[in-house]
Amino acid sequence: MKHLIDAKVLTPEYVGALISSAEDILNNPSKYRESCKGKILATLFYEPSTRTRLSFESAMIGLGGSVLGFSSAEMSSASKGESVADTIRVISCYADIAAIRHHKEGSALAASIYSNIPVINAGDGGHQHPTQTLTDLITIHKFKNKLDGLTIGLCGDLKFGRTVHSLIHAMSKYKNNSFLLVSPDELRIPDYLREEMTAGGVSFTETEDLSSSICDMDILYMTRVQRERFFNEEDYVRLKDSYILNKQKLSLAKADLAVMHPLPRVNEIAAEIDNDPRAVYFEQARLGRYIRMALIMDLLGI
Image 1 (cartoon, rainbow, N blue to C red):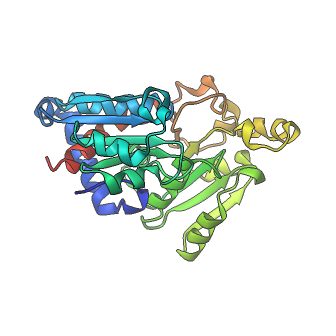
Image 2: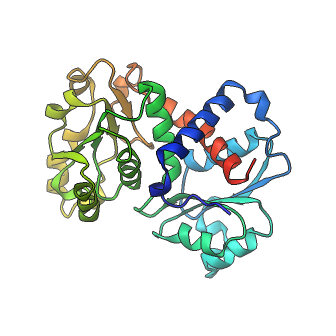
């Protein structure tokens, strides 16, 4: 039985196969409308989600399958103290595959250990979010037609952002990629990740200045600078405007820059650039449905 728990297992070969499958589903949807007929996806979401939960459900329905699950811990027996292990044991009796999001790191791994069905990590705490990584990779592939030889800018909360950590792990496996890590000092990438990148010979530069580095980027992956991560309001107020992407900052970038965001957006990308052809974050969300369709089929052996 296969699970997808950690972005580290996403080899270039596997990613390439999933992207090819997703592109075929996108181009020939009628061919796949009954691929998962009779199969059930359980969405076990212990914390709120819009895009991830709905894209999983839309993906399964698009393949002819059915969906059951819950959208918050309060709507499950977790509110009564039931463990993730017991929940997945029960869900294994009702469904063929499960996607789980949980606020605690390692919860998806724990679920996979006790599960009798394939488990997909839909985000565990600040740790990993591998299907968002797949969404990011298919988006980069669509707009750059490659996954290597790129300068990837990551901006905002790089310390707690699970999407950032997963994307770094995935893109580090392709040749000649380099990273520009733009964040306030308080939200730099975790030490363990910096050590891994250094040990692996991954090229990266850390900076607090988006305006001076955006000109070198092929990809700009924006994330929210979160007020709650700061020890005092003064530091937040001092830094927050530095990480708002607007027309003025975008004017300094390459004509073919791709601006991405895992969403939800708050104010870190100004609405004034939504119609700029370099703003691809809504298309990124759309592509997430098709890569999840490909993943569900693969894990079910279809």
